Image (cartoon, rainbow, N blue to C red; front, top):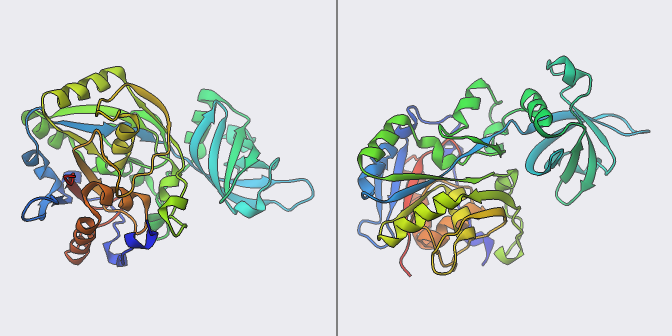
Length: 364
């Protein structure tokens, strides 16, 4: 499909720089493609009223790490330059894939020292967080082989790293301590993401209590969100776009519980596109969900037949992004174009810290 079909104009004032407070007071656009009216305006705390006892919400419990690293590149015979690296996928105990800027000035074999001169611990000032560029790919992607490994590397990254705010926020203000809490779900536990599963940012303990009282189940899967989620689609046709892979897990107990939900006629509601992508990666053609682990680069565009997910809770996404393509596949392109036009006109807040929506799947 033509990528320009998924384009729209978004005024700067619709881009949220801070989340709603309390989190569950964000606005909530309910989209039912096969109902009348199709669009209804609510708040996130109204979510239980759209669910039935026995339905199941599926959350991504990945935890954001401070994966934005600032360093100095060293190369014999060349001047030192400042380098910014965003880790996006771990590929070994001591290795991470990363997006680097300025990518064109980095070569295989370069050494990068992270943290020096930034007021961090003496260990880091002594160069204990240093890496060699082991491989160089396209579009600024590199593979870093760190001198540290395992938990020691994790601790060093936590010490010198910064929360990798999305570019549309970082361009308008610097990261601060508030983001360490704001850019994390209240149920995050599995470290490894470099971007938050933002639909989950709206949940509070109060909302969980209301969902429990309504008899709605909660289940957790893990997909470590990568920085590739921020990358624009540069191709003119969706067939030419290549997704970056992300690592995910569905436990045997969670798979069994979700299959029981389907067997009794209840619905599976994915909280966020990351949960949906993982469930659809694992699901068989029959809709059965097996235990699953591995890397997924699933790219969902209109025409895709959904196998596992009945409803989707998600924020509002970038123009021409793979995520807007996904929601258009789920609820219909015309429906989502109308929904986004309504959201813009009525002042909904977009992107990671913005408002939310609940999409019902369009019937085939």
